[in-house]
Amino acid sequence: MKLPTWFKSILQSRLDDVFARVALDPEFRRIREEKDLAFQKLFSDRTIISKPEFSEWEDICHYKQEMENEYLYWQGMQDGAQLAYVIMALIMDDEQETEE
Image (tube, rainbow, N blue to C red; front, side, top):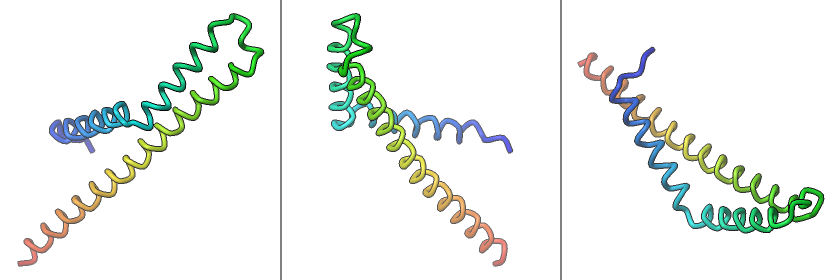
């Protein structure tokens, strides 16, 4: 089944909105700032890979990515549930109209 253009546009708008919220979220901002600071400390020394600062930076990067992925997953679940609810309501309304 091919999605209508208007529906794709609505989905893209929703995706843009969710990504914007992730970009502006204070918790994600704090994590990004920690990651940037750790990155600066990391590459102030070229032999850093063998030092604990590298592991710290790597851990913070992975944690940030996990947090963003989890947020996007749950937001997608909520959006999917809302979409399913609306579609089911439309189907039920359509069935009731055809029965009457």
